[in-house]
Length: 284
Image 1: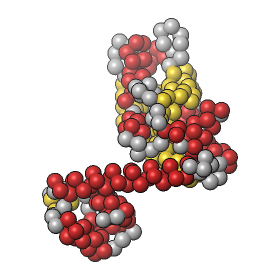
Image 2 (image 1 turned 45 degrees about the vertical axis):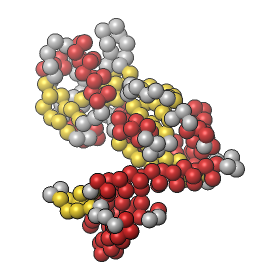
Image 3 (image 1 turned 90 degrees about the horizontal axis):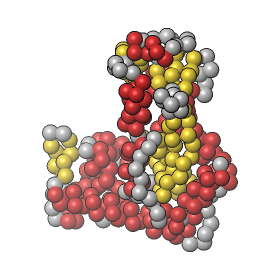
Image 4 (image 1 turned 135 degrees about the vertical axis):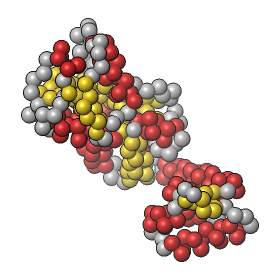
């Protein structure tokens, strides 16, 4: 069993569906099924079976999947160290990035970094900050860019701070908010808690939430069409000059702040490509 088989096992385990795994691996379904049977023949045991929810792994199969994960991780680390031995800044930089930051800020950062280090390849995974933290901890990515206040026991660098704002299609008095329609959007728990704590400090009654949408961009469109107000980090407001915005302030008149941070493991900067990226962000 070699690298391709490790990838096959991980993909099937992730997808739990032979057809979807074959599509992801750019293989035909018969070719993938044949290779899976060959792995079972090599180890003399059944490693998968069809269950009610799709492909299920036997205990022996789960063990092989973990083995495949460990071997792919070791192979990746070996390749990274080989690229690092001449101290040139090259190789693959694996980033885990908060979806909102990726949407509004990441592209120019990567463009400028690659202009300075053209031999680097970038692999980006986006998602909630909590998922990014887990990916960094498991060393599935080299560094993470997260938003909000999160506990991280190793290296952490503040990248930026921004204000959280009230946004509506026309001026709104803060004292009227409890009686006005508010539109909520799906976001990570740290921003939810930040906004909720501010609300609890300022008002004695709950907000009048009339819509729940899945994305912050959808919420902004609803606000722009006068269907209610929303509370947003200022990061996403750069193209919304036609909207009324006002900073959220606590009882002491201090703005409510949302942080963006870079996190990485203590040992990560042993690789020149990670050192270069950390230093690049620190200088910019």
